[in-house]
Length: 631
Image (cartoon, rainbow, N blue to C red; front, side, top):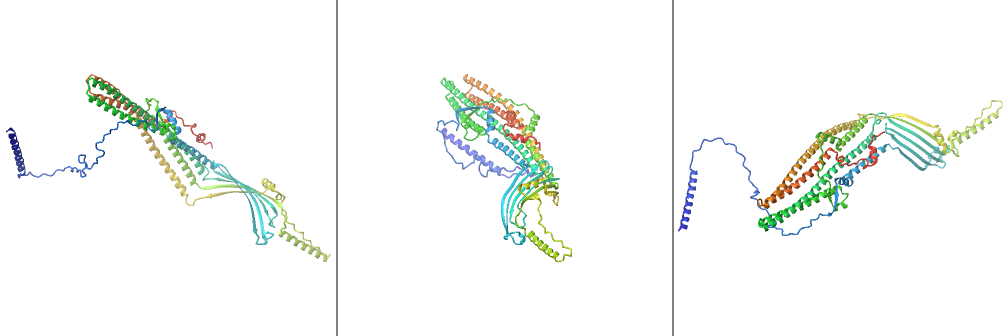
């Protein structure tokens, strides 16, 4: 009966509720007096709807991959490091690491080769002023047909053989752009020409000539510019070598401290596993004594597994950090250094340099190789301007030459047709005059013609090959020439003027880049100093946090033993302590890397690490050519 009354009352309550809802709907439909309309107020744009239906609670079409996955494999994989024997450890100081990097690093080796290439380029440029000695020696025999009586051929042709030896010497004098030329030419001529008086004939010539520029090319020219540019490029390659060395030193320092952190962090994670296992054994004893619930043992076992996972991650970080460091110092991929385990032995608490912003910026502007490279680029531009200013000048050269000629030979045994026919005619006329004089003795006699004898050669021309040199050194047949030669453009030498304008604008561009470089260096130094100070503050805070975490962890363990704490809080304190230790070490290594970055920013990485790459690491001639040119 009571159950029936409950059902009836529930039914009546439902009907009453429906009636109330219906009456409210009728009231809503009853017409009401509308108020005076007011201007509509602006409203915000409606929020766009999720047209693609990709909201987290509406996402559809997500495929299920490996549903209900659970790893039942509890076997421990091989935790050894790939390619590294962890039992074969090699202690390494930072200086040893830097030494290996400077000896084996490929970037250092490439820049060292660039220095040697620049040295050879400098030698090649200076080679322009080396004297050039040349010569020609040949034998020639030529048979030429005679097409007239004056050809001199006895049988319708002439045959002539020459043995020629020519020597020459060319060169330049660097100070004034003077060029010189000396030559010695001599030949031995044999011919069957009937008109030749001397056969064989020896001919020699010794000549000297000098060209002295008066305007263009006197004080400066392209060869002298090339020598100065090659010298600047040698200095440039040397500063590039220093710059790359500084960069490698900074990279090695950072990699060294990263490896130090990775190894120390591995130790921290290993100690955390040890502490967690000790806590696990302690909790098991408390469970046996009835002071803890069995579930507290499960919580600690989970903590142990999590710390073991951190150990594996730390081991992987050690391997990566060590590979980075080995890549900077190993000579090649087959070197034995890849199979050993590095152990950094330098203390991590390096002394922090104390310097002001002004001192650091002044040192950077003085030591940074980039500044020196900018200076070298500016000097090279000045050489270009000097050259093109010279090329704008008119080209007028003074020329002078002097030559000595020598000739000698043996008298030819052949009869000259002209001289032979002339002698026969003279003799016939002489005989006729003699007969006329005998016809009338009373008349004055006619003087007979005296036969003309063929012209005789001077005695110094008759002789052998040695007489040729006698004629040359006796200066019997000299030739002197003095004059001017010029080459002037008709329209103002527009090419040289355009090149000069280009060089002047290039100098302005270099100056603008210099100002930009100085700003970049200033930013680099300011950032390095700020990072250094921030790293110091982080280290201090991290050390305080680590000390407090140790105290809190010890206190929480004592509370747990006295029943005033929970295993959850103990595990939290344990995790916080492991993180605090890692954070402190990370802050210390970051401070060491900040010191390395400040050394790089100020350009004194080599001085700070006592590294000398001067003349003992470069070819001896580099120091020689970098010295002021005494010429």
